[in-house]
Structure formats: structure tokens, C-alpha cells
Image (cartoon, rainbow, N blue to C red; front, top):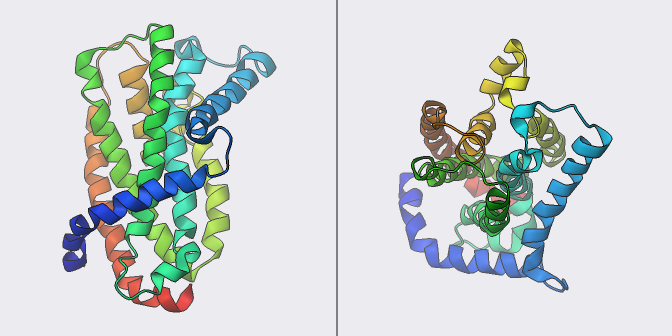
Length: 264
């Protein structure tokens, strides 16, 4: 494992090329092309804003106003997270020709999936920035310094889960269908469309067990809420756990590596 892990930096050129290829392939033949990276999160935001302001008005607490900005702070990173896991669960099966090549490092496929979706996340940040300026969000330089830390923790968490899912799905194809339903539950079990304080005490205990809760709350405290970033201890604890999850994910992937060519 450690030998293969040390080889990863050598493949950075290949990873870069595959990420660029993935981004170009996603919108090949599309009229709007890369603009969908901006339009998709915007459309998602408009749908939820319509539901909670027109269909279900008065169901949200005042602390989430302006609600569109509150929701966007969580939906944008969630889209990166959920899309990465969904695509990673099928990436080895869909790349059988590459897997069967002896010298091809299979672990870079889920890594490329996560990084390509991270690029889409970054492309959505200008829209989030425009919303922050429009609503005059109370941003402070000290809190914004935490933003790259939150992104790094999310990257490690997503990479660890993507490695595990991609390896296990090769042997247990049902995981792909289970994951689709699990991600729907996971979304509503994360304080993205409601604040953490909205949940009752037993519910908060459950939410605290959800790792994405601490990412969503961190983004909201840095970008939306006024006041100091008070969730940093949870974020750092999640960062340590995410490092461990990444190594555990790589270990599982490495143990199953030899069986991929036969199963895909």
C-alpha cells in the first residue's frame, strides 16, 4: 500500500490530463458547454427557493434569511460531494478497458472523478460570491481564511469514501443503487435546507454523527452567519478523521486491486 501511495505524485500529469478530458467529455455536444457548471447549481437553488418561499412559505426560521443565500452555502458543496460519490461508485466498472491494462494505476480513476467535480464546485463559487455581495453577507478575512481548510477536509473525506465505494462496487453492484437512495436520505439528514438549531436535541445528536453536517455548518458559519467561526473544533476533528478515512479507503482499494480486471 505505502509503495503504491508514494507513487501517486508521479501520476499528477496523468491525473491532470484525465480531469481535463472528463470536463470536456461531460459537456461535449452541449450548446451551453461549461456554462452548465454555473447553470446547474443556479437551477437547483431556484427550485428549492421556489418550494420554500412559494409552496411552503413561513416554514423556515428567521435566522436563515436571506434563505436563498443560506441554502446555496450548503447545496454547492453537497453537489460536489454527492456527484463525486455517485460517479465514483461506477467509475471502475465503466473503465474496464483501462483497468485491464497491467500498468494502469486504477486508483487515479476515483481520484479524477472527485477532482473533476471539485472543479465544478470552484466554477460555482463566482455565483456564490455574487450572491454574497448582493445580500451583503457579513464576511470577515479571519473567517475566510478557514474556507480553504473546509475545502481540504471535504476533499479528503470525499476521496476516502470514493476509493471505498469504487472498489466495493466492482464486487457488489447493488451498492450503486443503494447509494442513490442513501444520498437522498443523507441530504435531508444534513442541515443544508434547515439550520442546525432547527433540529430537536435528539436530532442534533444524530446530526453530529453525520460528517457532512460539520462541513455544511462550517460553510454556513464562514459565509452566512455573522460572528466568529465557532465550529472549528468539529472541523479539525473531522479533518483528522478524514485523513484516517483516506488511508483506510486506499488500503481497501489496494487490497482489492488485483481482482478488478477479472470482475469488470
